[in-house]
Length: 214
Image: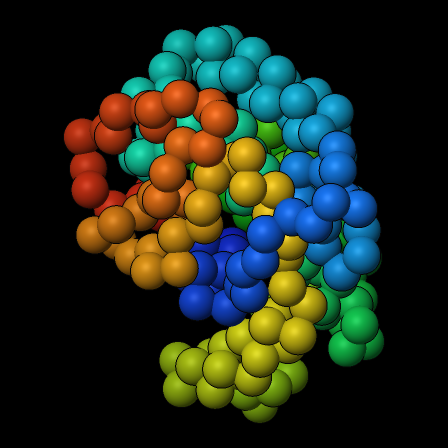
């Protein structure tokens, strides 16, 4: 499985996601994606699971190569995975459980992949939804680009980003202000800490971690 299959969210999300503030009738939502809420309770459960997985792996938030708090990182991945999947499905893309199993096996198995995806703020229970979103969106990019070579991927991403912009994520501002200029030099997904205090100190590298590669 080519590494581009599991780089999609990190490579495209910052450029493609339309950003707005949370409106009063969405109170209690951490984010809203295409009319579907990610509740604060759902986010809290994922944050607790993710923090427990970090502790088990003996990794601290300051070891992560991002400059955001854990709630911000987990919310970012939950919302973008949901957005990517919804957009791809709306264009007719489908994924089987067997395709997900194949990618997991190709990356060394579930346990190994779960550990690797901790660096991308993916809680263990969200591994398969995360992979599903990646595969769905990769198929959409390939469909638009007409192939899987670098030029085709670039063409496909350009059109797919337009689809993302048509289904914006609505973020609750208490989680911070989204970083619309995100890059390897400025990897933070939010430009302030909202109500969650100062972001974790960055790890030893400046760039965000690359997803696992075969």
